Image (cartoon, rainbow, N blue to C red; front, side, top):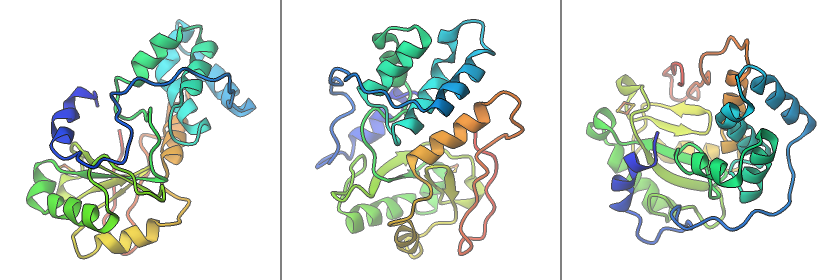
Length: 231
Ligand code: FES
């Protein structure tokens, strides 16, 4: 999703936002390098299927988002640029254009609540307000302990199972103000469903020859609603 599509909604409720604004310029990159041997091999495999290396910028950014623990630091952007023969500015321009790339730190769990029509009429905003109250953050904010970032999301394509929330590489469905905090308690301290795992899932999908068509996400047992493919 392009960043401009969600800015209007986010502007409505970002008071007391604990995050550094996504609009602030990124600091200059440091000479850090975090691509593992495996990441380099994956990048070479992916890039070999494009006519030019620079065309692999999007998958390379997913690789970087995984290797850098869930968000793209300036050093991550520089490492992608160096690997693909692009300038830093070219890579930064791509990374800041799409909301799925995190150019600022996110909580260990990024709670993305769908607030489109079907979810909205099924109480999505009640859930958002409950999360804001219970976690002490507004939309776009991150809890002081770094566990949760709360965001709105456009339609997550499970309208029949509203209300839906994406957390990393999983979707959680049929959420209500009654069951949402139980899920939050499950997530707290969990190593699953992190932004880095989402990036890893997408890297696997992007591997040429992959038979995967989506994230393979499923709800927890307590929320028995199978999830479908994630684009
Ligand atoms: S409206 Fe929420 S998943 Fe479609």
